[in-house]
Length: 248
Image (cartoon, rainbow, N blue to C red; front, side, top):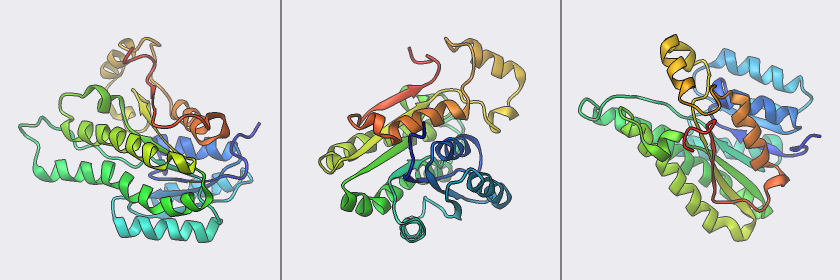
């Protein structure tokens, strides 16, 4: 059963990792996919071909969600290219980890800009078309770190906690128009980024998780499908932890 048949989704930061996983699973469920990427042109072109081969319409856009004007322009272009925007997945994010004592102002500002300001930019950009349709699902990618904090990640934790507060407020503002706003808080998800960690670190992480494994991008993507689909029409303002029980 294709749960997203006929829906059009924008996914930010989808050329690799969790974003790519979401794009592929959305396409499998029949969604048309517009996705953004920053620098990975080759990876984006490959993904675009892969998604189109699944029989849906898909297109990659080189766009910086942290830039207000670019976000507005992207939403306008996607609406012209696809005719609708039903789902927004705010996934784009970066880390610039350091202890607060050593963290420069630039590293703090950049992480807030890319991780949090982008969510404001993109939500503003799609709001008008969703209000016109009186329908929409906004899914924002937070993190277990945004809920419990993490040493060496004050900037990242602040950005991801901010996403939760922002999403709850959007849920309250737009609920009467049938626009839902929810958050996913992934735990330790094994992607290209975590593949660079040494084996001992990964083993320590896995052993600390009740399910004794790291998550996959598909684990996050399946939760996104649920929140994007009509299976979750009475769910808004919620944070769903997809973390193998880390915060249990």
